[in-house]
Length: 378
Image (cartoon, rainbow, N blue to C red; front, side, top):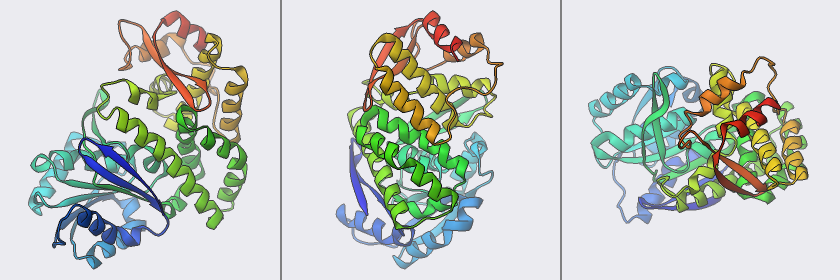
């Protein structure tokens, strides 16, 4: 098992990465209690999940918690999709927490992907002004990204992630065995974010992916999840989590600009997603967004063409798109979506641009005409 400690203003917490961890959730939570000097109690634990995840993973987590003396109740989000990040679902979650009733000593366990973590985190951060939260992410994207760093959110009809808090968990437990049920397309989309971490802060991760990605995806197609594959995944998740933890420690509340680098490729990606009516998967949009950001950096002279080409080749090796399939993209429409980007100031855009593999910079004040020229090259 690999571990990382993230030091935040709300306390220091472990991020655990390994195999067969679902069967140990209860004992791992007790160890964290002990580390904080709390005597074991019959604490109430409220598991939040959805039907799909619960079918595979609820039983081992629940049994582990019961063996460790926790009292269990649970709530399954109704849709199993982005629709769960809504006011109505959050109200239902709060109501069930009050009905149980959960107390200030209770813990919410978020068992699932990013949506489960976002909604559970917001509920935990606001119920009784904040109760303990433990993330047990079951998708690669959640394990490398959304479960780390303390962001919680729901959507409104006209805006994504517009209502939320910064609320750090007591621990994150990432079991690589839960990834075996992911589809090949989910793997590809998740690995777009993995590549992002290599570009923004870990050249060794990027090189590891270049060397092993074809072998890894060949193993996925055969559904061959042997010890070598799982060890590779542990290493990849650990390296991504380490980059994310370092960035969050330096800019926990997004007040210093450092955390902005986690949005590498995302300014273009969010516009491409919106233009597709959100039919384009996020990972595919990020892949194309990173290619465009690298192209902009090459034009600036801040990135060598060979580094940009390395990124493009790695994305292609994973089966990710490096340019839109449709020739109907409207440059003016994409620019209109980019104007809404929260990093935009005074009508000018901010981009995260690579300087090399493993190092990026924040470039502010980029004109619309400059962006228009990049988009025309699509």
